[in-house]
Image (cartoon, rainbow over the protein chains, first blue to last red):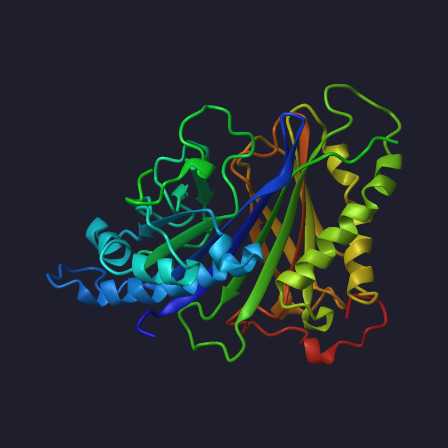
Length: 194
Length: 194
């Protein structure tokens, strides 16, 4: 494994009521977050390919962890998202190198498919910084019931020379969706959008 | 007796491989189970609240079991524990104190009659409030290697008329414990202290 992992934290959320109404079945989502050493902390490096390979590894590992936390067959996951927070000795581009070139392929391999873009966010921050992982339906980005976000934070990360990498997976959309738009049963599944 | 109304459950599992020192042969694992419930006493002073402790017992057992499951399923692997509560703004600290008995006894029962008092903390706070839950060894409070804490919180809880209940378990000492004191191997196990 290329990534030097200090810790992995998984978060599992289950919403069973909202505004006094039952959510049935409960809306469930999970995030797996790895805290890794930033190999390029403290100096400018032109070639970020090592971080891209780390992203590939973490794409598989964290998706497996998140699905395991949900306790569902991987193919029945409905939405997904990814995010990274770079410690203060790193640059935003390090997060981009992990998230964008190679991380998505293993995520989709673990989940069976995933035609839609994996929505992402990134930031630089200190210990305990909150990361809002955007969520979108894995088959069609325009499914409005599944536009969502999941906040995660780890009190002792990222240290200055670390990066936090997060992947979130759900088995459902928002708890009580009612703002219209494309629904999941209307997905055509041709272009990852609708 | 008021019914326990659950809005949301969250389980957080941390796996700690190192903290700048040698890689742990067995990574330390810590888990927190958080449940957000409606505060049946929110918004008024109620003299007699003790009965709610009884109502919370099944929830305590459920949370304790979910922690053992999150840590791999073997109760014998659990070495540390703690508990806490955050009461939303329309409640009082005393409502948080209702959690001491059902939370503590549930963990002891699930772990096979652990002897040490369950370390605890509580406060009144708003959505996103963070709580540092103290952790001590399950059979002897003075085991220094197991003095620990886990920070938890949920971005949208507790709302003003809610209580966030928390239980925490760990599988071992701090990852690089080396400040001496009573060792887990030296526990006499008579009084829950040493």
